[in-house]
Amino acid sequence: MARWGMVIDLKKCVGCQSCTIACKAHHFVPPGVFWTWAYDYDIGQYPNVRRTFLPMLCMHCQKSPCVEVCPTGATIQREDGIVYIDYTKCAGCRYCELACPYRARTFNDKLRNYFGDKPTPYEEFPDELRAPEERYVAGSVSKCTFCMDRIEKGLKDGLKPGVDHEATPICIAACIAEARSFGDLDDPDSEISRLIVSRGGFQLLRELGTDPSVYYLH
Amino acid sequence: MALERQTSWGKLTAAALFLEGVCGGTFLVAFLLDLLKIYEPVVRIGLLVGPGLGIIAGIILFSKLGIRGNGWRVVLNLSSWMARGALSLGLVIVFGLGYAIPSLWLPWNETVGGIIVGVIAAIGSLILMLYGGLVLGAAKPIPTWNSSTLPLLSLFTSLLGGMGILFLLSPVLGTVQIVNFLHVLGRAGIILIILELLALWGYIEVGLRGSISSANSLGLTLKMPSFLAGALIVGLGLPLALLIWGIFIADGALVIILPIIVGLLLAIGGLYLRYTVLKAGMYIALYPV
Image (cartoon, rainbow over all chains, first blue to last red; front, top):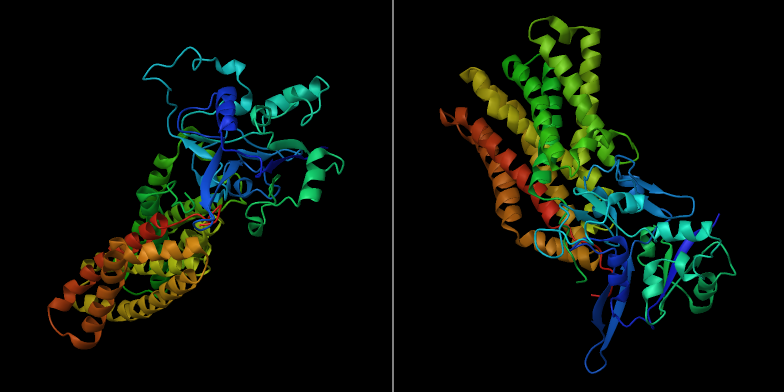
């Protein structure tokens, strides 16, 4: 069984937020909610100052604190490492929001429209056509799903996630700098495994013991 | 920004955590006094008020849920402290009322069955008193909530809150008994307040020497009026002074209303302390600050 992971090259990220918008468009993410985004901040002291971008998303941790703290069992970790939310079980207590070190989860108190009170035809997209993990409701939390729907469809069609764009998370396909890579962390020959070893990939907040499936490269 | 305060849990959650703790504290103290067969009028009411406060806490927590239809699922995953807390609250309410209500008319509290029911409720009460610190401690990315002193603080605040509730109920005792009640419970209250001040000092000292977010969070706490005026002065300083004065110095009619004043101050202080801890909770920084 594959263990899906992502590698983000911080040297390549230019902070264009294409990943942010692509994710929003693909998953119908409402206003004010972001499943992936890039922090931008300055490091160094004048005159040696540099602007750096830090793309963030759900880390799909192997030891997920969100799975542990969820009282209803709505947060589930699959065998392939993807953590998703079963919205039929979520009670909206927001405990997972507090437990996530990466601020990956957002609470949807109500589902807002992008333009005024009425939804646009695009926003009225029928629920039946959304993937189950996208059917978040008002009062629940939502987060990145590693585009489970694209991975599953791609595998059914005989495609390889991380290699074939149609089977790869949309943020990777949208990245103009090719800063993101996707693949099987348990396959030592996969591109991401080789990148982690050769470039010294690191995990954010490793000391918390969450073992994220997202690695960063300097 | 690098340092972010949590915004998921606010005033209502603070109130619910406070009420849960005080529910446990009130029932446990009343139960212990009932086993000793002293101050019966206050104890009878206290055994009912404790679970009653738990019911109010439950209603507040339920109303805070985003999807209330799934509220019943909150006890399903027992690896979660929230599920354990919900279960403990249920234990205190059901077994607490199961102990208190029959005891109003029958010598139920003197039977083996009654005592077993009471002990189950007391165990639930103990968990509830610690729960306020344990449920926050599971949120690893907020360093000040991971402090080992937080469950202790929660325990002391809950016990003091429980005592405060019994103090508020003390007018049902006669004048002489009120003074005696103040002297007995008040002495325990003085010790608990001192212990809580020590635990609070430990919480702040350790936090200030911790990570940047921990130090910032506690720096913010020390400036918040809800902490300085609410939790420290109103909630601990004034009750301590009044109890010492009332037990060791004062003599006269004023002593009779002292339990009510102290009870009110303890309750207000406990609520403000919970609120401050929640409000000042700051996430660990994701990138260099």
